[in-house]
Length: 337
Image (cartoon, rainbow, N blue to C red):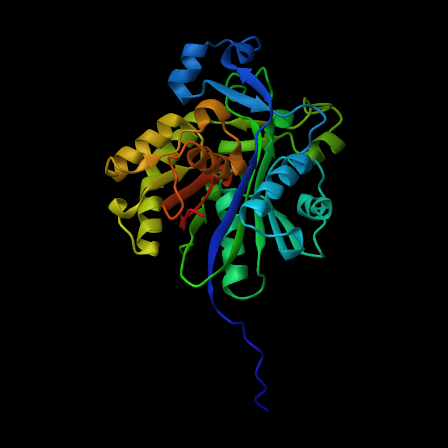
């Protein structure tokens, strides 16, 4: 008996709205250097960071995500009742379960949406965007919130000279909706698990629970990073990944208006730009200078900054690429709403 399973209706998708939350507490390099042997000049030279933002102690990733989502929904000219999916990318949710996405959905008053978290660190936003694109394009959902949110100040050793000046807090969200024309390109993504320890949260929870006589006892897990290894990987691999993204979109560097990489390090951004030989007309995101490295939140935060400053205009084509712990990467081209 030849019984057919009902298929899905295929269509296109687009980013229809964007919103962010930036904490109000500004942390200068001088404040960071009170706990580590470094200087404002050294931090600026090595990373491009001038300052970063930390969320107040009573502000959670749920609070930040909700604030960003409310703005994104309004920007898309939708109502919360129009949202039927939530994908939240983070590595700083303090609960193993339930997913932060379910709590965000409840706070927003959504009507029983599909909701889940993903953990792909600094590539998380582009991973989540790819999933939302697939859901909408395959008619599995109509309007999906894609959220990147981090409160990395909770997971940073402020006395670690290798990480204390890098990480920061914030949230960004977009709404992915149906479109008559392609406005989100196919995603190029991958990982290299052989380098899993290049950026890692340690000690792990089982060490804290079981190993009573180790140095891990009583320590809060924090982020550790082998900075030079990550730098070499990003500079060596990401230019080719960006070329693959452009090829998948059927575009060339001269077709792009904006380059919005994960805000990891300004030196990495400049090295990738040089390798890709973009024309001068392409504007590049440098939000890291005042926002720091916000992992999964960095791409939407950078997009918002460019739009706020008039650099990014509706209809512009933006090349996005996220890369970091895993080592994982992902990217796509989108049209600015």
